[in-house]
Image 1 (cartoon, rainbow, N blue to C red):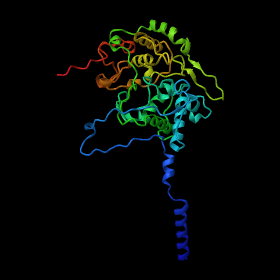
Image 2: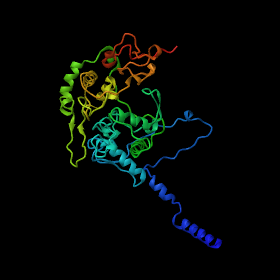
Image 3: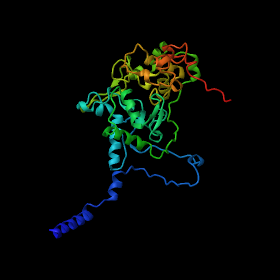
Image 4: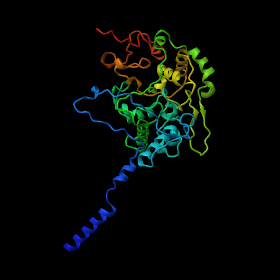
Length: 371
């Protein structure tokens, strides 16, 4: 009996060694990213801030097709690996959000987005375009302090912030396939960028801050700018231009709606803030050839986000930016700054309209002179 059991164990051992043994090459293949990482030298006896590295060059990873003008038909060129599969799915989620997790998809359990926008509606070129809210260095810069939440935020939390605000929907499960795919795509975009590095073009260009301190946005002029430069794409009433569905799936928008329905960003989105929207418009609009003056970008941002234009209200915005020292100047809600945490605006004599459309003098603070 003992001898038979021993023989069985030995046979199993042989089987495990010959046919079920760990294959390192298989493990490496499934995690292959397609990026040839440089070798790093570990310098002893110094701290990271004592090492002065030369300028590090970055280039986008390879895409098949035109990722800026034809994102739907473009795709990342990735290895045949588990990592590559998640990157591809993350790209699909990013540029075709409404067809995968939008409010009109067949499976109710997949309806995480509350509108038919895509992530690409704001992060142009699938997150690859300079000065158009690119995501190329996001992986290298999270976790990071977030002033809206007054806390240390993760990349996953940032994705879900967009889901609940710009996408007017619901948070993705942190360990779900969709979140992993989003993070894989963002990681793939950022390969080669060192932790903490800031790359050229990562931020929006800004409208003249001296101008906005001295002048309120002119909503009437903004309406004229919109009619002249924006309505041909986004519609006379901000309704956008929907694509025609070819396969029965929600096709989304060629040009996104800007107000007038629940199918656009809600009042908690960054694009609802006048200065943030003005910076985005100055940096990106008209798409591919941004030509608006700072004043026109400022005015049309105020017009698009005017209180007379319907959009979904994000609840509890008074709890955004709870620390007045790091509050953005164009947040139009009071905060818990008063006695016993009562809700007031932080700057004496300023009204809600001052925060909404300026002028921002006295709201945009000047850094004290060094003593």
